[in-house]
Length: 243
Ligand code: ADP
Ligand code: MG
Image 1 (cartoon, protein in one colour):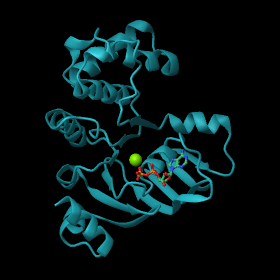
Image 2 (cartoon, protein in one colour):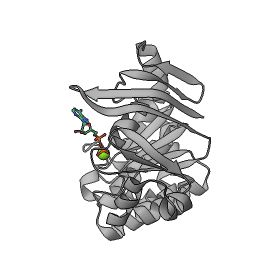
Image 3 (cartoon, rainbow, N blue to C red):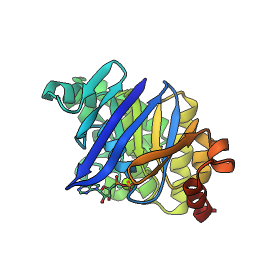
């Protein structure tokens, strides 16, 4: 369902992504691990075109683009295929939990206000926050804010949800509530790519793990292979640091 080939991105001549290639099937859960600065965020942001790749072709669902020849129309259509969950939640501070979800449905998906409210409440219920519909982000815990961020990402029914270190800003107990929610989404056959430093979570929920270093996916495989029988010294030494 996702196909990436020959993806490159440099920042001021520094190669953040170097000839990245991979495919992902529908319903697969992929965790992307690797040291800081290895290009994990740039990879996710390229899939959402928050970063414009220098070269390469990307296909998600029925939308295919080539980095060198992108029209505004293609960018808009391609962005609709994914939604992103950020480390710092990126909620609108001046909107309630519910409004954070309905805004995008009304503005980008042409829902009526009533439809958007109904859908928004349904999603808040799914993430266990229907009682916080009218609360502003500042009055919510970090874990609750991230659950609103996840409800918002789900609201547009994307082909794939991209998580960039969704628990890195959270205290350990809030981390658990957010990881449990993401694990429950994995059970629902959603297609997800998750950049994470939570190794035991990655091992438990992922179908495959991508290990990145210096702008490349240098190893990929099932969790059992990556965590116990990695063929790469660099993966082994990275995982050793987490043990
Ligand atoms: P990771 O998420 O694995 O920590 P990133 O994708 O954020 O890595 O970054 C990969 C490399 O690209 C890093 O060296 C980083 O400094 C650089 N980089 C990322 N985004 C930008 C940017 N907007 N401008 C300049 N350099 C960037
Ligand atoms: Mg990052």
